[in-house]
Length: 562
Image 1 (tube, rainbow, N blue to C red):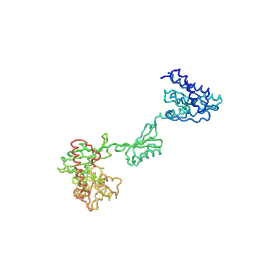
Image 2 (tube, helix red, strand yellow):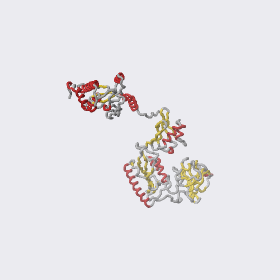
Image 3 (tube, helix red, strand yellow):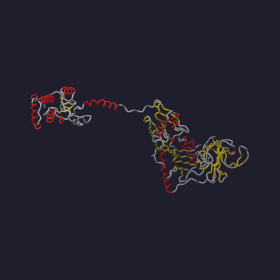
Image 4 (spheres, rainbow, N blue to C red):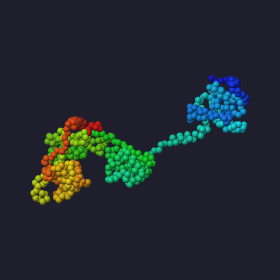
């Protein structure tokens, strides 16, 4: 509720009553100071009680040099934290001034009356000049500011400090508003094949023009997430530039994963790998062999690598040129890995899970199985290894042009004995080792032309003649695995056409490769391993039947098949 103006004259009497009640202080009140204090208070209170907006009034109070430093205002009153102000209870009388000062009177009014609150703020330049003219010590820059309680949060009293810090605050805000530095946009790139015998650092420095120290920093970052030794000579390296400045590189692995090296700062690089999620699927195909297993399966959509893998599994026991009928059947179930977009990951490879040839109503099933030691092999339904010690036919896509035994020599026309089997094939067709062993001979030998002999056991060896060339890297003493390429079909020596002359020698004597009894060196499964294998057969059989019914690819969990 507003006060009336006729109530205002009572304020001087209030001041006098307060002063008289404090007689214990023995202070004499100077009439001039009382008048100044009363005028100040009347003006402040009048502004509070009037209906108009409150006004700010300033009162300059000279202080002596002995005045103590003021207390600190609370952080709640100042937006920039604690500030130094003058507390009115700490104001002491000036030199030659005794008694109760106007400042003390103002303090008492402030203590008895909730509003207005009195704060001491820096004095103006006018008050400082007035004090100097009067011959008094220059007052500290303080000012008394009377405000109504209309605004609870007072303005900062340390105006000088605020004015000084304002440019710094504006500068800090401007720095915070600046956008974070971004990587420069790639403006050009070079895609370069690694090449045979090449290194990644050499490719960057010699062929892409990257400075040496940056190339080695980039390769160092790459090695933290990827082994550069896994790079293939045919792999392409994409080198990235931003306005001719080297910014990084990118390598796409054969499984589709992407390895990226990017500049992090002027002298550092970071690397990351984006892995491609792969999903195993199985596919089933079956049909009649017809004129050729290869042609029949290819018409069905079986990939070449799967057909050739199946032929390789049965090559040692089946003559696909003369030992099969058009009505014989084949079945195959194979696994491959596909990406999320449906493309096939060729780097992961393809595994034949199950294969079967039905020749004259006789089944010859084979199952892929990995034992507890991680060894993968193919076994028949009884757990016997499918691969015997030697292959009788160490070459694909061939036919017998001359069998073992007596014959008329096509070159001389004389009747003689043929100590091996000739397999006719196109020139350059790969020739494989019939079994694991060690090369004991590799040279040119008369009518045999280019000739290789491999010892498999103390008693058994195999020989290969008329090769057009040997495979590079093989020499006498080299160890070879069954199915490893050792040379290529030709017609060196005494030959009327490209073919492989193949011999099996037992205790140094040639035997008929098609009929000689061969020892079975493949292992058989026993005990708990055989029980686990029989369970695996049931799983594969059910899987084949399900894929056969769905007539399409069957997606598997990652570890469904070993």
